[in-house]
Length: 113
Length: 114
Image (cartoon, rainbow over all chains, first blue to last red; front, side, top):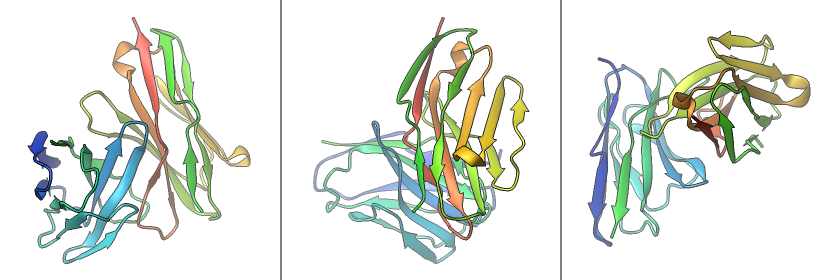
């Protein structure tokens, strides 16, 4: 089945620790995205990548980092510099980055204790 | 600057009623795309529709219909004969020509009561 996988579904970390969220897609999409969702805030773009080995900051990139070494993978690291990391994180991909609908993974709910 | 406003934060209707979710957008571009997504309690966003700015025809897909009106910058979504399974958060979104990103509204939480 083609789709986007994110693991794990729930993640707990202690304050001050970096944590990496995984996102894998087998849709052969060029573009991939990371969003953060907080209650009542809608989706906010963290980082996106239009092509392998290239990525751009979104609206709330501070405290996060990404890599795009393979077309199918776009991991997100939440660093200790992120002041409020507890949130629901959604990964998405699209055929290309312009005009096309994005398809979403199931999300990872990160809780920092 | 582009913006998407979903003024209805939360709506509750009784099953089998019709319900319309409002979406108003702002853009300076003449070429743009509008989207609707559904987020059920499981959390994954499900793509529902994409409409480009040059196509103002209304669209119907089963119980779902969309009304795109450029004159009022609106792209409203109607569910006919609502069902409990329609309970979800619905997001309207906008992408401008040449932009790599989609801007999402804050969503409308829809409760369908049995």
